[in-house]
Length: 233
Image (cartoon, rainbow, N blue to C red; front, side):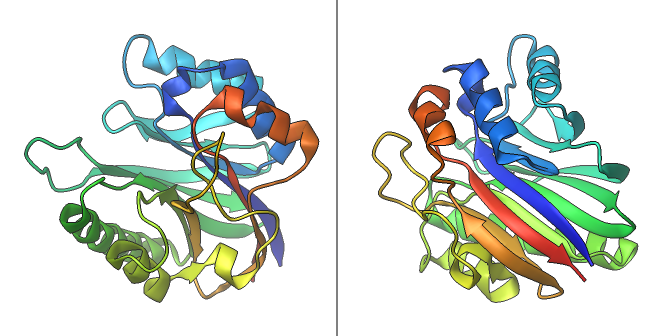
């Protein structure tokens, strides 16, 4: 069995305090970091690379459009990456799915990041596309999936419900820390999640409450990080 620590974090394009973002990520001690709203405009590659280096990580997967990235720590060997644009919806932001297949201590894992729509109908449709894409990668690499993301919807909504029926909602399975992720200054909504295949044991999941981290939350971005402790069997 292999223990893997995964972080999901919407960093609002590093428009706030990038140093605070890096401190939060380092303090979470991740093996993998799945970013939403990664920088995607001027010098976007440089900004992502600088964040990764500040955290002792490498950029494993990601593209400019839709602002998604997967960062990997020194324990992870990157085997394969993909980036898929989801169906375009007129007048709405383009949505996507970033995927990195990694091997950690001999165990393979498919790590994915997404950021779904503000509107319900395309959000539900894109959740279905994400599930189909991940099922193909899971079968191709015989590896379990951990999907992370800013779902823009709380548990009980149609998109979240679809994901939770397909995967384990990690916080619901093994809550550790707090649940609400938005906003960083006044958290009242759980709209960011980690979803794990049934083949994965969720040892704990939630927003860390360590004061060394929480004092940077508001300065870093408008979301709080979700950290999942996973055991790959």
